[in-house]
Amino acid sequence: MSNSFAGSTPDSLSPVAQDLTRFNTLGLVSRADAFVTLDVPAQLPALSALARQAPSLLVLGGGSNLVLPERVPGLVARVAFKGVRLLEAGPQAWLVEAAGGENWHGFVSECVAQGWDGLENLALIPGTVGAAPVQNIGAYGVELEERFHSLTAWDVRQARYVEMSAADCRFSYRDSAFKHDEPGRWIIVSVRFSLPRPWRPVLGYPDLQRHERLAGGAPSARDVFDAVCDIRRAKLPDPAVTGNAGSFFKNPIVPADQRDELAARFPGLVSYAQADGRYKLAAGWLIDQCGWKGQALGAAGVHDRQALVLVNRGGATAADIMGLARAVQDAVIERYGVRLEPEPVVV
Ligand code: EPU
Image (cartoon, rainbow, N blue to C red; front, side, top):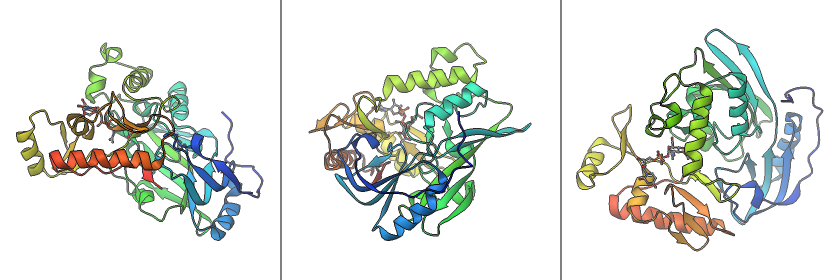
């Protein structure tokens, strides 16, 4: 894979009007008045200059965690920086760096092919490398923060590069400092991952324990990668076919007494103990039990194999998706007294 971290020349940026429907995985009908693509980091000073004149800046990665309105005001910048490289093959860890615009799954595939193992549980998550720390992506027993080393971000406001450690990013479940700072402040230019050696598979998640590929003992990272891809393909809609943004809600975390009371009233309740004594509830189960799985409101639907995923049934707008989201939230509050919080960023 080519490397574009260095050696590019500064460039100017000329915003154009752009249809954003294919730039968001929900496929919501959306338009930007002023859109630029960032191909190389050398364009970042020009971006800061443009952003100073604009009422707002929206940063787009793969658009897999966004609910876009029909018209996005202000400036929209799509991050397309490319490059993957091994920085260090240490005795304790591989240190691998990827540019923010790299496709996440492509990067994970490349790591597995190179023998830089440790990201395979995160296979097939839609989106870019730069978006991954923003929501601290996680799946099948691994969260990004467990493999994160550091990142380089561009501070759009102050027009300078900043190096950030895991502590600076303030990761928690599907959350980071980037979700709380002013929107459009940061462009994630590159992310470094520390992949522990020797590699040990993470197989604790129930779906993995049940998977036939992993039943024989001593699986390779490639086996885990293939199993995760199988499981995701069976449950989750492919955004290239059916618009979706992955899980639309976070799994709610509740105090132990609330979980005990709910488990007494609803015996099948799915919950996971957290390190701090609280419990994470399976939002997909709550929605499913409310009867919303496979149901629709106009062009927006609840996926028929995983109720946590909302889908675009064709031509949906943000209003359609948010209308369905509210109906689902209301049903879950009414039955369980638990508030579901949307996971994607609603612009
Ligand atoms: N469940 C149902 N009905 C449903 C969906 C789920 O009963 O329609 C039950 C399942 O049977 C299971 C439990 O709920 O007992 C949990 O379901 P699942 O294993 O599918 O995982 P999840 O908690 O719904 C989370 C992540 C996913 C990630 C999977 C696997 C969040 C918000 N979602 O889903 O992440 O792939 O675990 O680790 O934490 C994403 O964030 O976009 C995403 C897809």
